[in-house]
Amino acid sequence: MREILGRRRRHRPRRKESSAQLDAALICATARKWPVLPGAGLAAGAVRGERGRGCACPDPECAVPGAHPFDPGLLAATTDARMVRWWWTNRPTAPVLLATGGQAPCALSLPAVAGARALTALDSMGLRLGPVVATPTRWSLLVAPYSLERLGELLHAKDRVPSSLRFHGEGGYLVLPPSEVGAGHVRWERAPEAARSVPWLPDVESVLDALVEASNGAPDGGSRLAY
Image (cartoon, rainbow, N blue to C red):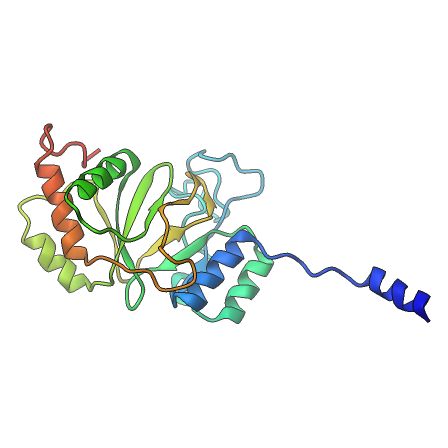
C-alpha cells in the first residue's frame, strides 16, 4: 500500500508556477482595484528595440511594439481575478496594461532623459510624488484620476506646456512593470510604497504646475523637458 501511495505522490503533476506578469496583474486588479488587461506583446523571435517589427499585432509598422491593447481590446480591462488568471495563464509573458482614468490612476509621461531631469527638479521643489514607471524611452508619473474636462481647463490656463509631455487619462492606458515591450524592460523608477495596497497619488494640477515651472526655469528655456 505504501509503495502505491508513494508512486501516486511521485507521479502527481506539478502545479504550474505563475509568471511575474501574472503576479503583478493580480496585485493591481485585486489589491489596488486597478483595471488591467494583457498587451499585444512581442512576436516570437522579435529583436528587442527593433522599431515596428517586434509586435505580435498584424501591423508591420507598429509604432509601439507590444505596448498596446490588441486582443482583447481596452474595454475588456477588469479587476476580476479569475479573468486576470485566465489571460496570463494562457499568455504568461504578455505585458501588463493599466486602463487609465475613471477610478484608476492617470499619468503624465516624458521622454526618459527629460523625465529623469524633471524628477530631480520636482524633488528640489519638495513636491511629493507617487509611483513612477520607467522604460528606456519614457518615464511616466502616476497621478490621481482626472477628467478630460479638467485636464483641458488646466492646459488652457498655461501659457506653454512642454511639447513632449503626454497625458494618459480617461480612455487611455499605460504599460506597467515587469512588462517586456519593443522599447525594452518596464520597471519602477519609484515603486508604490506598499505592494499590496492602494498607493498615494498626487493631484495632476500640482504635478503639471511643477513640470511647467521646472521647464520655464531651466537655463535653456525649457528644452530639457521638450527633449
